[in-house]
Image 1 (spheres, rainbow, N blue to C red):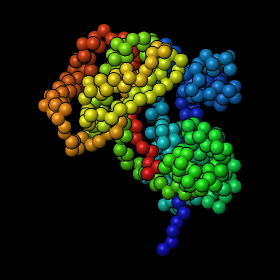
Image 2 (image 1 turned 90 degrees about the horizontal axis):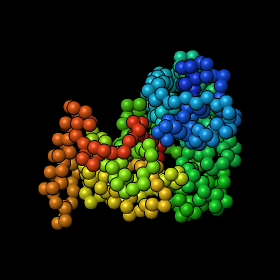
Image 3 (image 1 turned 120 degrees about the vertical axis):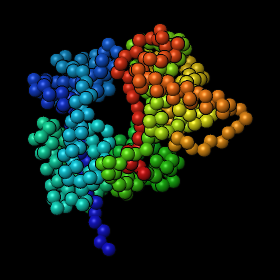
Image 4 (image 1 turned 60 degrees about the vertical axis):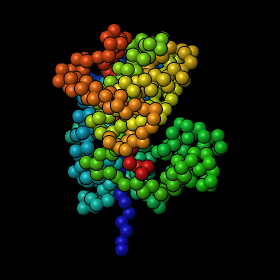
Length: 414
């Protein structure tokens, strides 16, 4: 039997949001440009920037005023998400000309398995043709990485930007990447990098050489996984373009128009956010086995708490009450609240068997489920505002661009 070495591409659209804005408005191309959230709704952070802005030290995630201090002539533009979705889909259509194994990793990145596309050329040749096609047809540039697995393909696409193709082969990856910072490798986030640095592990090669027992003791199962990645042992497949990975969590979050200073303010926000989570769970045919909240204060410090549900549920009211109980138990009110996120976690399939106990009123639960379905039906016919909780009739002003989360696994850690 002949085993064929896999050929994996990672295509990353350079400075995607900013590049789309500059393509749609060519007058922006000669300026330092940053795509920023709404300052009025307190989303005034840099979402993306072009290379001219990057040269001034402007970075993603910092506030607009910080960016303006670095670059006085910075041109800021509001995001146009419908355009980003459009061009993301157009890029994927180009990728699908070469393979049906196209796995998105965010809006601007995709893995491609072109192992069976050799008739179109070698991996580097296909990557370069895709790069030229995206530029010619969409007016955007990509950086493409070519390797024998997904982790190294992404790593190689990050090594040379913009508008470039970089390859990492099996016979040369040790020399090419083991000297790179550990944080450059997919899977090494801030927390993991801090933990590794505390023990003198600063490079990918040091991860590869670390004892299994040490990595497992330090980072658990993920520690062993990172060592495998560093040694080129990532065998995760690239998913089919039509595959739908299972939903892992459903959440809604918002940065409020003003600070929340009382528990009542927070309760109304959590109740409002939960109104959208229940219907989304029903559309996914999932039930929440737990609730998680993220709270950010006005000093931009964020904390999270989670709690296992008494029973799987889709009820917005139960989710809101569980979220509020977590908040009351954990938040010390040293500062007012700036942002709130509620998530349904530990999802199980709708209709899964549930162990009953003497302390849960099954009849009451079924009654609440019927009520939730009736409310969904009314809102579907007459709009979301047709039925509201009384406490929300005079709720605090909420911006319309709330953050919606639908979390799915990427498939690479399976």
